Image (tube, rainbow, N blue to C red; front, side):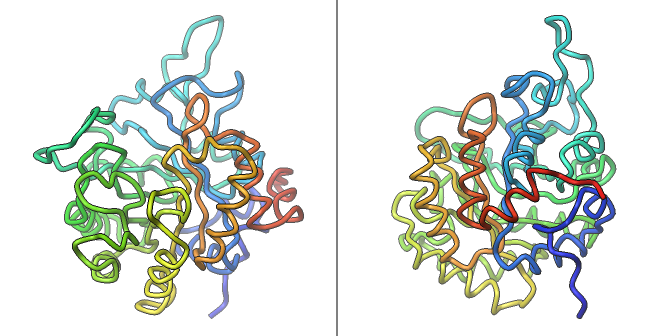
Length: 321
């Protein structure tokens, strides 16, 4: 099998031509050095005026960016993608195509798989908005507007269950086939069920991973050791080993979140090295910083620790040729 060009070495021109299969192969070829940023688009206009957070993250070393809170129906709700002019927000947000051309990296959308009847303790941070949930209509819209990948899970306190995520994965595969890279799992919202890799889970993680892969996911999403309470390198490493062995070619993603993405760079560096030890193919950083984005210096530190200065600088330059 001839692999696509490594994502960490691909230019904007390369990436704009990628199919879902190309993207998957390019991540696999990068040998565990791909960085994913997360942009919460439903609050604020961005960290810096005149540019989107997705562009900032790519400029600091992210190879992919996931849009969280993206509303497929009420586009005006995507405040983080709307330009501010003369003290007023533009009526319409930038298109995914435009942002992708500017940022030069694959863009994806996070779809929530909420359990409406679940009893969630504490504050309700997330409402099940029609335009943000996993549904056939929203999947087709994502394909239409040019998303490169989708992520199925649940924001904190959404009451997300694995059964809901598995159902959503099946629906996504039936709807989209191989046209978009499908990522699924649970690295957050452990209020109803423990996250993947948690040794206290009532159901073995490998059983859940098997169901997700059989349902059609291309990427299993897992928590990063050191960011979720009780999750160690060993726990995540065992999950990654099963992902890679159960269906070779399936990818694993380790997600640094739980607001730890807003810690100091020394903490990011320490967790990054643990993430790399898990064997994950993609290393993601959450949006818990300022204005819907992780701190740029933390994106940079994650990139620096995972793929070194050479590949980090290449992505920061963002060459088009």
